[in-house]
Image (cartoon, rainbow, N blue to C red; front, top):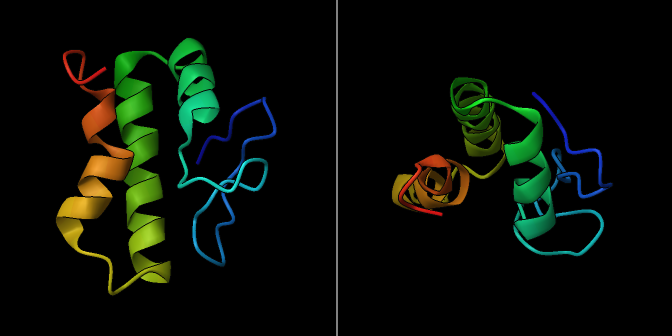
Amino acid sequence: MCTPRTGHDPARKIDWDCLACGRPWPCDPAREDLLTTHDAVQLRIAMWDALEEAARILPHTPAAELFERFLHWTEPAAG
């Protein structure tokens, strides 16, 4: 999985919140960096991988919530 260059990395083994700002990852700074360092397909693949990893750590989180958090924002119109 890719991680942003900004230091806004996920707490992967804990709650998937951002280590820098405490917001749910990918936070806005992480998203901005990921958008500039990946093409659309690479970004969606990386975020799908992140979703799968997060689902194992957060098994009680609804699938729709994980989709919104990790994938929905990668759609061009979702911005």
